[in-house]
Image (cartoon, rainbow, N blue to C red; front, side, top):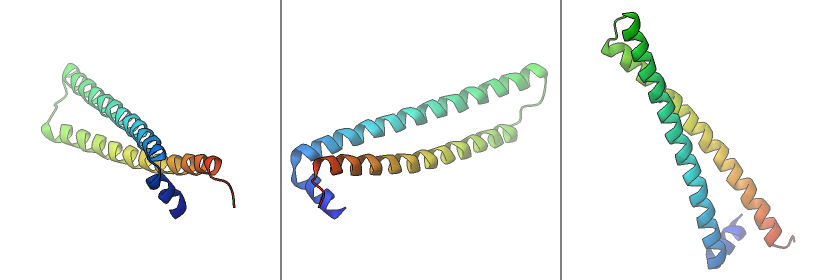
Length: 104
C-alpha cells in the first residue's frame, strides 16, 4: 500500500486523477446528505401540519424529540455512508492500481 501511495504522490498525473475522483465522491456524499436533510425536514413539517390539523397539542418538547430522532438518523446514515464509501474507494483504488502497476 505504501508503494501505491508513493506512486500517487510522485506522479502528478496520478495525483490529479486521484484528486478528481475524491472530489466526485465527496460531491456525491454531500448531495446524498442534503437530500436526507431535506426529506427529514419535509417529514417534520408534515408532522407538525398534521398535529395542528387534528387539533393535537404541538409542544416544543415533542418537536425537540422529533428533531433529535431525525438528527440521530442522519448521523447513522452518515456513518454508514462513510463506511461504504471508504470500502468502495479502497476497492476501486486497488483495482485501478493493479491494472496500472505490473504484478510482482
